[in-house]
Length: 149
Image (cartoon, rainbow, N blue to C red; front, top):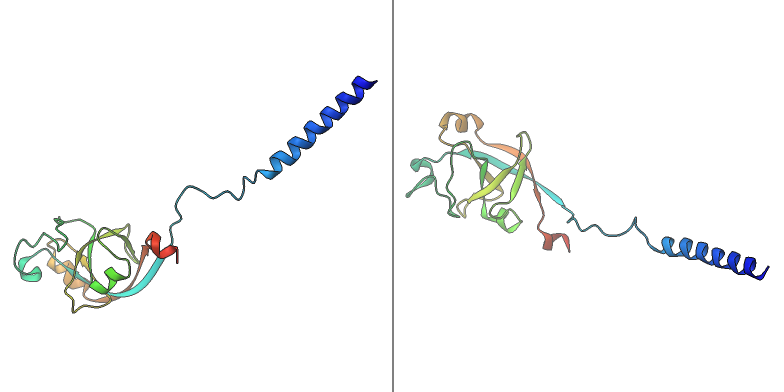
């Protein structure tokens, strides 16, 4: 009789430990080790440019202000310097509404330009002229220090 009572008490305590022990482990609310990406968007003026010396100035027309070498078919953009301050720094991936895939910030523009991007179109001058100048919406990932504010 005493053995039965002790056994039932032990079983009850084990059950109680399992219920309270596992319920204290909150598996649902643990923070993920994956970084959270926060996207920002801007409306900018977008024009197009080519890697031709009469458009880019002296020196190798395929070398950007950051030293990258552009190649035709590359998805690259140049950004005005105020956009660099807003988080569109070198190699930032950018989604341009109306285009497939991501472009990468590879070049920077002259200080006189504000809120502007140039879409790289290789050496296809006609394609760049057809594009002209348009307002577009762009999306880019905010830097980690920006998301902590």
